[in-house]
Every structure is written in structure tokens, then in C-alpha cells.
Image 1 (cartoon, rainbow, N blue to C red):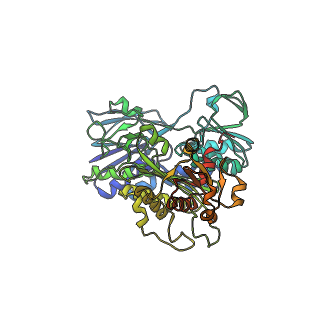
Image 2: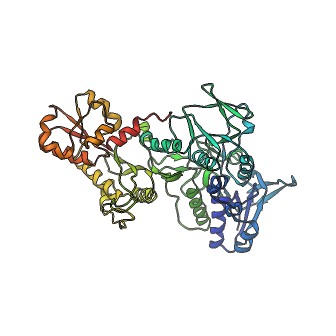
Image 3: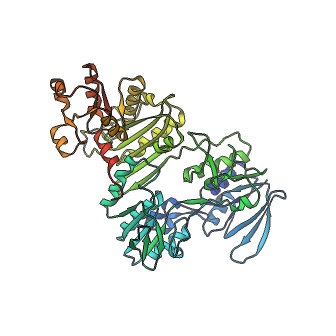
Length: 542
């Protein structure tokens, strides 16, 4: 059997090496149009910033090392320009010589990836992108001596690029057409990220678009001019599906190649993996673009299994992702609140702000966690977390629970590793389970930050159960301060009618709400407390 793989890196090389481990007799040819077939593309921004000091650290394998270990025929600077689905051949162009030749195959795997989007603006030819080693070489050369830079797009790559340019001592502006950084996050979870970036000197221009790139400046949609000796485009990627489209393969509405759950395309004997394909979403089951490295690696391995005759299927994609932003860690899995609202999916929201480890152990920092739960089934639909240490393991546990079908309320039963320096006896994940169980059983009622004005307008009295010192430092306008420890004695101070209770993060508010309910008062707790409300109403464009 002869297998031709178009494109290397995560998907293509995972397919090639796994296939060799399964089929020693197969002839495996990898055709890569770039100079490098195996490199750590997720490390590229950190090489620009000097965090990864050596370029060779990014280069994982070479054609020679792959031939020696796996007997792979890897040809770099060989571009596939056409596919004949009937004859089962590909036309290949040698980029150095311009010569073209025809390569036959028994099975074909497309791993052509995605390309950075560069809008057709005046001066766009001066903008740089970051997708491969050639891009990073151009960027490293360009940053030498630069004093000002503009990064366009506040997604994962844009945020990482802005951080690493600041590490190089470059005055950096991040321009984003949307109202917040990291669009996959909900607004209240993105607010601390924006604050962190500003605290480290990044100028944020949110709700703005680039209209023109000049020699050392850029112009914004509001006619302001920003210094920019260097411009980096990071507004997103587009599947490189042109080759497949020209061959008549089915392409989805997002531009990615359509595949079944065994990564077969619409043409026999042709498969596709990685950023170029449309994946099956874990929440809706519909097709979605998920350009993440772990998904590409997983699909590369899986397609090799399918070709080798193993019975496997591609699992749905949860879009679990993580990014570091200076001293913060930001992670997410599944769907956000705004996505669920957009499709009309009924859901329940839980916010918490737990410490990463036991409070009595030194250097305990808080994090913000948000859980989204199906209103009827208690299934986990998504989660987000922002903070310092411990964010990564909590989102990984939640992603695993979501994949395993563990209901939100059953998170309280998970037996998770505990020692004071790593967590609490009631881990933040367990606490989400307790909260979910209280809401599901009706033991507690909550309102969300965006419902506060409506609830107060309907006649609820806002009661702040924090300490007097906390109250003086900032509170919801019009709130009455009755500290939790004084609530029993001062309940008569609260006007008759419904009560909106809140504290700093929701925990004292929960106790106060339960107490008031048993005293015959109609009380609801503000989910996530004053901290969530404060972050959500903050103007991120400033």
C-alpha cells in the first residue's frame, strides 16, 4: 500500500509516524511545500519574545531523522497543485526547480492546515503574520531596533504576540474590532485579562478597526493614528481547502473540508485532518472549525488507524484551549454564555472565585471560574477559568467531566488529589458541584450580573452582606450594608419585599440567602457576587 500525505507538522506527521508503527510494509510519502516538516508552531511567539532562546528548539524532526527512524519519504518544498480523484494521483511541483511530476497513491491524506487572514487594506503588504518557521524568521529580523508595534486581533495568537513584543521592550498596541479581548470568553471573564494587559503596558484599542498601514503608523476607523514600525496580523485563520475544492471534494460553510467520523472526505480513498477540516462540535453535533494543535495531532493518529483497518471514530471537539497572559492563565472548554444565548439553548450559570490552594498555605491566589450547565439535563455545556496557578488543572478536570458525560451536580463527588499547596479539601471543582446541586434542587436561587438592574427595578432591595470596610471600598449603587454576622439582629432594617443579596464572590451571599429564606423573606443571591458584577460592568475599551 502506498499512502501519500499532503502537509506535515501536527496532523500530517502524526499520521505518517503512527501509520509506520502500524504498517511496516507501507510506502509512506509526505509532501510539504514549506522548508520544515515538523516544528513547534505553538512556541513561535515565545521565540519572538526571547522566552525560547534557541531557534533549533522549535525544530522537532527533519526529513533525514524521519527517514532514519520511520523510513518515511519526506519531501520538503514540494507543493501538491492538483488531485485526480479518479486516477488516484497528485500533481507535485518542486518549488526549487519548478519541475512538475505525478505521484500515484492508494490512500491520500490531506493535512494542508490553515492560512493567516490578511485583509486587503492599503499598505497590507507591510504586515507580518505568524504561522510557520519562515514567518518567525521574518518577525525576529523585523523586531530588531523596533520601538513601536501594532498587533491586529486579540485572539490567542494576538494576545501572545502582544505579550512577547512587550517582553522585547517594544511599545505595543493591540487593535481589536470587537468590544473585548479573547472573544471566546464571556465579557465578565475577559475583563481581568484586559486589565492584566494594560497593567503590563499594552495599549488596547477595542471596538476599533485598522483602515490603513503606512510606513511607521497605522490609521484606525475613528481616524486616530497609532505608531507602528511593525504590524502583525493575527485576526484569524482560514482553512487551506482550495486544493480539495478544485478536486471536487465537499467543503462546508466554514470553508473546511467535510469529513465523516472516520475522517473520510466525499471522495473514496481520500482523508483529511487538522485545521483544514470541519469538526463535529461536542455541544450541538454540528460542523465547526477548531484550529487547535491537540485536535490535529489526535486526528493524525486516528486517520492512520482507519487506514490500517482499526475500528475507531473521531470524537466531537470541545474546543478546550488555554493561553498565558503575563501573570494570568486563561482557559476554556465547550460553549460560552453568549454562544448559547445566540442559539436559544436553555442553560444555568455558576460563577465562583475560589483560591487555587488552601488559604492558610502561603501565596494562595484566587481564580474566577464560570460553569454553564444544561437547564434540563444538568449536562456541562462549557467552562471558563481565569487566574494564576491551578487554572489549567481545573479546566482539564471540567473538560474531562464534560467529555465523560458527568452531570454538573456530580462534580461534588469527584475524588481529586488534595494537599494544602495544591488545593483545598473541597476543591474548586467540587464546589461547583455543590453549587450546581443547590440550584438544581431549588435550595438556592440566584440572579446573574446582567439581571441586577432589572431585579432592582422590579422592586428588590439590594443588600450587601460584606464588611463595612468592603462596602465603603465599592458596592452596587443603592445597596444597604448589613454584614452577614449582624443579619439575624438587623433583619428588620431590611425593607419589606424581595431582597437581592450579594457579597464579594457569592459564598457569604449564599449563607445570607438561606438565612433570610428561613426567616420568611423572599431572597435571591447574586451569582459570583460583587466581584463578577464589577468585572462585567467595567468598560473594557478604556
